Image 1: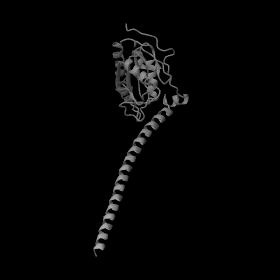
Image 2: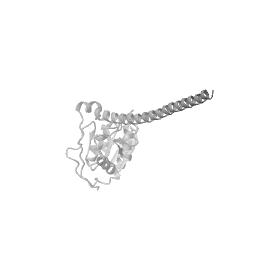
Image 3: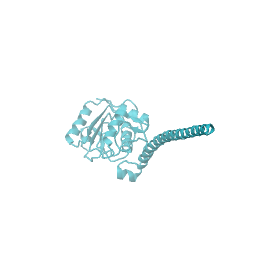
Image 4: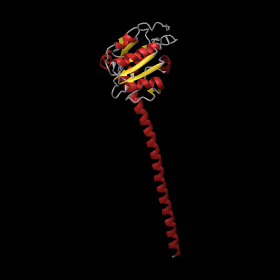
Length: 240
């Protein structure tokens, strides 16, 4: 029998729109935009439910996983979230991690992680031994089979204590967007835009320097030409 441990007290530590089974089961199922029945729990999943955003939604998902060392597999399934591409972001954060708060390789609109640091993300990557890509799959049989396959190769609990991280979410935001916090996304967007603006300003500055140099060169050429013309004219007049 695989070794099991107790998850963090009160697990899942982040409330949300999902179903919870036996916390000592080794599988978490993220159904992206789909609201599926909790059938994965019958086959060995500890938790299942939608994950709709590529920022705060993923943060909450990771927080609940790393606070339960028994979870060693993550199945990403259900309809992909249009625009957000949350499923793609989950796969990429597990594979590539985060650089300057942005999920490396994610294609969604705002794949920025603000409430988790490198330690949390590294723990997620180490604890989840396999992230299974079933994006756009809603078939109950396929998902159930994937859960069973994970259970069959359960390596046991991750050999470290539950890692607890707090992520504050307003109640009304939680109800409407199942975990989406506009402020975090807006800050991420502003940060990205500011970086783009800074690069553009540097580019414009370089262009202005070049243009100023060309203009100064033209003026200098005109003045030299004028001086030479006057000098030649003086010689001609003197010769007469």
